[in-house]
Image 1 (cartoon, one colour):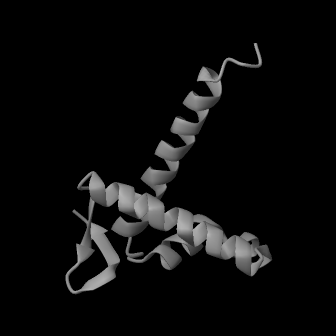
Image 2 (cartoon, rainbow, N blue to C red; image 1 turned 45 degrees about the vertical axis):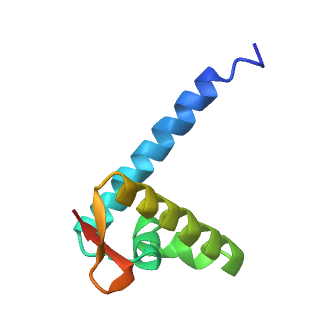
Length: 88
Protein backbone atom coordinates (compact mmCIF):
# COMPACT_ATOMS: atom_id res chain seq x y z
CA UNK A 1 0.00 0.00 0.00
CA UNK A 2 1.73 3.24 -1.11
CA UNK A 3 -0.17 5.22 1.53
CA UNK A 4 1.10 3.13 4.44
CA UNK A 5 3.65 5.56 5.86
CA UNK A 6 4.36 3.56 9.02
CA UNK A 7 7.29 1.56 7.58
CA UNK A 8 8.95 4.71 6.23
CA UNK A 9 8.38 6.54 9.52
CA UNK A 10 9.97 3.65 11.44
CA UNK A 11 12.96 3.69 9.08
CA UNK A 12 13.40 7.45 9.54
CA UNK A 13 13.22 7.18 13.32
CA UNK A 14 15.76 4.35 13.28
CA UNK A 15 18.10 6.38 11.05
CA UNK A 16 17.81 9.49 13.21
CA UNK A 17 18.37 7.47 16.39
CA UNK A 18 21.48 5.83 14.92
CA UNK A 19 22.83 9.19 13.73
CA UNK A 20 22.24 10.74 17.17
CA UNK A 21 24.26 7.90 18.75
CA UNK A 22 27.12 8.62 16.32
CA UNK A 23 26.97 12.33 17.16
CA UNK A 24 27.03 11.55 20.89
CA UNK A 25 29.99 9.20 20.42
CA UNK A 26 31.89 11.86 18.45
CA UNK A 27 31.34 14.38 21.27
CA UNK A 28 32.48 11.82 23.83
CA UNK A 29 35.62 11.25 21.74
CA UNK A 30 36.51 14.95 21.69
CA UNK A 31 34.57 16.60 18.85
CA UNK A 32 32.90 19.48 20.67
CA UNK A 33 31.26 21.54 17.91
CA UNK A 34 28.93 20.80 15.00
CA UNK A 35 31.59 21.26 12.32
CA UNK A 36 34.09 18.92 13.96
CA UNK A 37 31.43 16.31 14.66
CA UNK A 38 30.31 16.51 11.03
CA UNK A 39 33.79 15.98 9.65
CA UNK A 40 34.10 12.88 11.85
CA UNK A 41 30.80 11.42 10.63
CA UNK A 42 31.89 11.52 7.00
CA UNK A 43 35.33 10.24 6.13
CA UNK A 44 37.76 12.63 4.48
CA UNK A 45 37.42 11.38 0.89
CA UNK A 46 33.64 11.75 1.12
CA UNK A 47 33.74 15.11 2.93
CA UNK A 48 36.11 16.51 0.29
CA UNK A 49 33.55 15.79 -2.44
CA UNK A 50 30.77 17.75 -0.72
CA UNK A 51 29.86 21.10 -2.23
CA UNK A 52 29.87 24.09 0.15
CA UNK A 53 26.06 23.97 0.25
CA UNK A 54 26.05 20.27 1.11
CA UNK A 55 28.67 20.84 3.82
CA UNK A 56 26.55 23.63 5.32
CA UNK A 57 23.50 21.35 5.25
CA UNK A 58 25.43 18.54 6.93
CA UNK A 59 26.71 20.86 9.68
CA UNK A 60 23.19 22.20 10.21
CA UNK A 61 21.83 18.69 10.54
CA UNK A 62 24.47 17.81 13.12
CA UNK A 63 23.71 21.05 14.98
CA UNK A 64 20.07 19.93 15.13
CA UNK A 65 21.16 16.56 16.53
CA UNK A 66 23.25 18.36 19.16
CA UNK A 67 20.28 20.54 20.10
CA UNK A 68 18.08 17.46 20.43
CA UNK A 69 20.71 15.69 22.54
CA UNK A 70 20.94 18.80 24.69
CA UNK A 71 17.17 18.79 25.14
CA UNK A 72 17.42 15.18 26.29
CA UNK A 73 20.21 16.11 28.76
CA UNK A 74 22.72 13.91 26.96
CA UNK A 75 25.06 16.79 26.09
CA UNK A 76 25.53 20.21 27.66
CA UNK A 77 26.96 23.49 26.42
CA UNK A 78 30.59 23.90 27.35
CA UNK A 79 30.59 26.76 29.86
CA UNK A 80 30.87 30.20 28.29
CA UNK A 81 31.38 28.73 24.81
CA UNK A 82 27.80 28.32 23.60
CA UNK A 83 28.65 26.54 20.34
CA UNK A 84 30.70 23.86 22.08
CA UNK A 85 29.26 20.77 23.72
CA UNK A 86 30.36 17.99 26.03
CA UNK A 87 28.69 14.81 27.19
CA UNK A 88 26.44 15.42 30.20
